[in-house]
Length: 392
Image 1 (tube, rainbow, N blue to C red):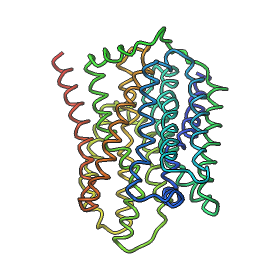
Image 2 (tube, rainbow, N blue to C red):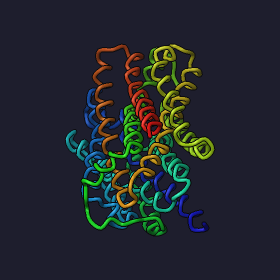
Image 3 (cartoon, rainbow, N blue to C red):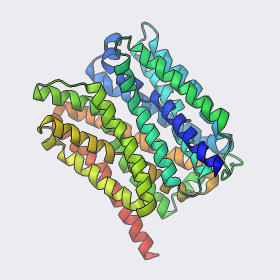
Image 4 (cartoon, rainbow, N blue to C red):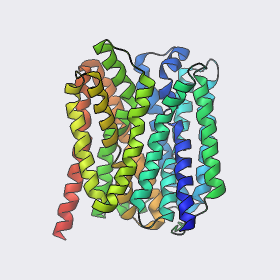
């Protein structure tokens, strides 16, 4: 117990520090576009390149079952090291658009050895209370994702490149903490050899299938919301002809999800993961549908609405990951979490690109209704699992 008491805070801190890589580009997007001579249409490609890199990375890590076959702490450290290098290469003078996409792609690729592997490490230490542990980890991811916006605000007097220097440094610190202080957990069951087919066998389990399908619906909404929060704020400010600090509010709207994850994890202990997940899916789905009305609301009502959405859009994520981990063989748990992430992030690219296209043809405030399809799928998947369980 004493060991677990300090192990989890280290994993959580490392996860936070390393995931600052994710939205480093988003935080300085206007300056980055100006420096590279890019247009608004290129934003979707820059955002999606990180997601695509993460997808290819998770597929690669899963195919070779890396986090199950090798020391996951070492995998985490090496991934953090390489991710920080590719993140910092963005500061090269005269960088081309293709180089920019390539560096962001490889940053995303090595994030595949950080986020899901961090969950794998936690699952090796916590047989019970995994939902609470993963809630803290995803909370760290949320805070790490939002943190570059805050860094950009604090370093606004310096070049936009300082954001990439800072996030790369933080990532190196986070990777080193895992490598130095977190050894293989007591519940780890090392895989003897790579067997990618084993993950397909897991889908025969109705509980596993329901959890993954619900997770995929959740992902349809999550990263598209996060990616376009600054645009939502800027568009609202333009429409209302007012000014406010977009970087600070973008940070708050995304970062508040970390607190929501912690609260959700605590609630799951008392009420169960599934009940909290259902409430979160219903709430975030309603936010998608209500956006056209809230876009014309007074400023503090609009900002409060986005903060509420920032809470409900993420609170179910760690609980869904916990359900996935519960319903899979421990020997392929790391691979299962990684491949689930891979498919989920493939869905985020489709969602981001679809929204980017719709923004050209649909009034801004109505575009976000399409995101409600994700929560609807999640609720449907869980209801089908309930029916299957009832039949048994």
